[in-house]
Length: 212
Ligand code: C5P
Image (cartoon, rainbow, N blue to C red; front, top):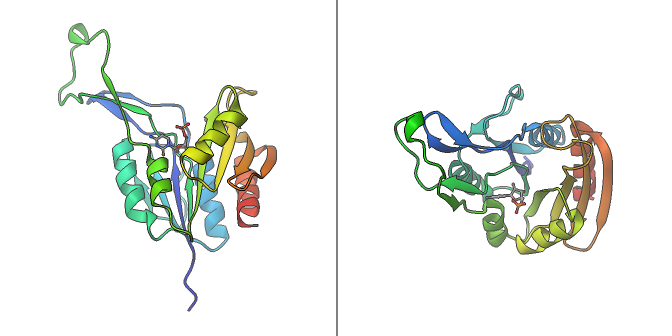
């Protein structure tokens, strides 16, 4: 029997808790990551999807590892990374978390004027540093300015094979929308514009380009 190729996808936001009723997060819907996981299944991959909290339907036949915080996402990704041939890091990971996560709800009158934050590990950069020759690592960059320049910097810095740039300032696309506009940059210097499409079509085009 031929062994199936394995695809690891992350999706959605993370939540960084301040106390049991408050957290810091972002508007990521998870739609792009779920579309990529479905496309990978359609193409015959064995798929692992690690998802932050989203409001999307489960995917038939796919076990989803549900996580909340960036630290939980990191553990789940590291656990599944070694066996993955293709890794698509689509999640909008919170860059920072509060230094203190209070066990009890902080009273309104006692709520601090400012919250001390600490940087989360960059999961993608860590995967990039562990990447083996057989693995293809793809990251995302959501930029409001200097998109191409920033995306190319991240491609190099995080040791990626491809980076997908979505310019979220344009026409309110990207986060939470059914549509997106993606440009792919490769470590070999290729630039491929996928244009403005729904996320299913984008997922399909991304696989076509990456697997070419
Ligand atoms: O550096 P920046 O956050 O813009 O990079 C975005 C890419 O890095 C995305 O693929 C995102 O999933 C990943 N990332 C990560 N861990 C973080 C922050 C971002 O894996 N703490």
